[in-house]
Image (spheres, each protein chain N blue to C red):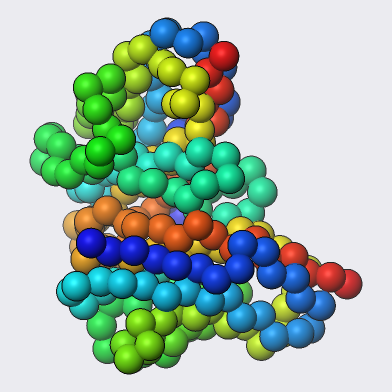
Length: 113
Length: 116
């Protein structure tokens, strides 16, 4: 069975500081990995995904994530936080793109001016 | 840019009543999903639908739930007799568009269901 663990239900950073949101997964088969963002009162928007190939994945809004198989991790980073990054971030795993996603519990990111 | 839409945005119902949540997936997509998120908890998979039939379902998706694609554009989730614990945000998603990126699920904005 697949599962996702997101460390930290709430992360707070200062504007301009590094954002690091942690995600570890377990999967018995090569995983597809996703980060979604949810702004208040909105749906889930795809930030980035890893399927195969390059392990460093770049997404929208300056976010990137690195797939590390040896660590079973897919941490999300952004060099410099912006106020508009404040949102809930969800890591998810699946067997392929068209199979059910298994989500982590989410991490709420707050950005302090 | 194509998007998944859901109606209504908020539904309030009495326990025991039937509700139907509606979704319009992206038009050329082939796979459809329902997920739910109980307040403060993780997003959970309910059911997936492909080629006019259920392809996978979770333990949550019991006999009180059903899905339908009645007219080739809408995708509905019916809860026959709502319970207090059905209160949640329900998300519809679609993926697998012909000629498009086939491995990304696109989510709608959600329907917040409140059962009183």
